[in-house]
Image (tube, rainbow, N blue to C red):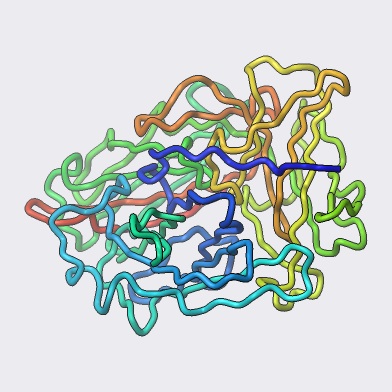
Length: 417
């Protein structure tokens, strides 16, 4: 069997996508398994307190040849554009453009690779301001310094109080296909004279850039504002994520039908799925993933790569092409397109992935885009939308006082429906 694993389509605007910290790989032939982990927990969003944070950036280069990779850190505004008017010395204590010195070759694996990692803060890099940060990695030997990957995270200085609720009783339907968010901000000691000018508030569903909305308050009170009965805060409820786990290539794991060896890869075929017609409760991680082996030791360098075969049995669905979506493909709406095979009546995709636990969804594109130009994906015909679904809603509030030079992140709240 001669399979060519599907590679993702990444668009230039990915660099500036709104929402929670964005990750992107631009050299998908040689770089794999990019992950930015907060506080050692891969299920947490990449947002931590400015006074106490710990992030680890890790990725694999698919050879045992050493590369001198350099990381560069930019402070970004609320739109993930590089902040104008700041010098590096304003947001960074130390040196920028430093080499990634932690690397280790894979051991006893069929697919060789080298795992690179760097933690923040470190001896060379201390960060001083709240807000969004983007890490860009490039090869020192590349004269053009073309980015190989980027990753984003956020640091918060809590200054205001956020109260929020999620309800299946929305302004457009009652406990059917949507969820509606309502929230209140209390300024505390923060001096806000004009909330429309001084504050920028975002709500993101399941860390998806196509489910990120910026909202303005519709109720203003002394000491705070409220966001209620807003159409932009009504979200399609989606469904619980599908999932699989590959901890051992010698035996089938969660949702794995069979594992076979066809040189040079293990091929892991998942159980055949079907479009969801009903809500069925299942504990999931809202699209998150973790790379690990059964013994959970030396995961970064002893885990195998395998070609994962995703299958969905269905007649051709209305709404067009079907894609895979999850944190592991950085939630880009049209990153991994599935192929429809009329002779078998299946949508299928084959992806080279590292061992671990993965959440995913089947989605289609609506033909619409967000205000940031990101294609909007829907689960209407694939996984369905059910108000009971447990979704994560991340609220991020930025503040820029009159004459301020950058967007401070002054409030963060994560809630689940």
